[in-house]
Image (cartoon, rainbow, N blue to C red; front, side, top):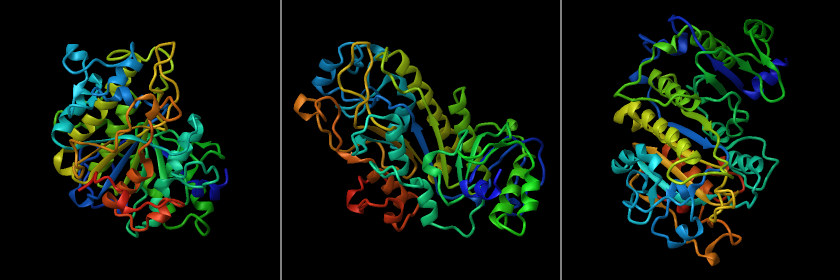
Length: 423
């Protein structure tokens, strides 16, 4: 393996860790008792980005129950209007929009104004390819395939931090996502119970020999931050995340998604300098048997909402003042159901924004309507908010990005386009 490429790719996939041990120099201020514990002097603003891969059906996720055409175009898969089907009814939010009943865990967040929704949001590019649309959203350059780095990595580059630790940017995924690829260091950490390092898409996995790589490059490229990275790896191996206990009665759902969110909470509480966290959850490509209040989509939404609710509960109100959770999906789905009880690839969608700084309890964005003459290409929810306006508002108002042109090249990421999501 080429150690230069290994460092450039910055896709060290960390995981697992064993017995409690002494912290390295940059973490000695943090007290670790039972697993990872909270260090108040380690607090900082954190963004948690969650990608719903596969194109979630935003119209059944955030239901426009006040729109007559929604029910006419989805005779089998529409979610029943509030109150008409008991627990299987839409959860009313504002008289026009409502949540899918499987998103019941989001209602307390909405009521406490920690949850905001942006509807009719997405990419101006009209591709219906999952691969291209995900690439465009993660690079934040719709229609441009030549972009080398992801938008979150460009943020890290544009906002250098002399005090940054190797844990500034973490992805709880097997491989480094497109949004975090670039020149700024970032770690891909699938699970704190397994230890693996991956050198990026062009390199093989490495199962050891890190000290050797370090020694070979001690007078070369492995200096400074690289030394801290290996020190951090060694440290994590000595910590036992299995001892971690969620706070405030939080209960994470089983599976990889719940585990990823729980471990993000661990790292935030540990005060290790986490600023950008990423994870994803798949399965949203509901071409067949999507279901309405129950079924394939409902099961996914239950896991999704319960996981995010558990994360918010676990961190508690004080820590959530420093945290924003942003969800996204590559595109929405057709307004009309298809012949197999599902929906096909569409256009605009819905996003959730959760956190203490969020001006929640509102659905943001201009609603375009669902009449035939209002649909995009006669079949999809039309776009009224460019996803980059949401990304840029979060980057600027939460993380403190100053030069948005560096983060969103080729786009006028003007503050005049912000929706007012954050206080």
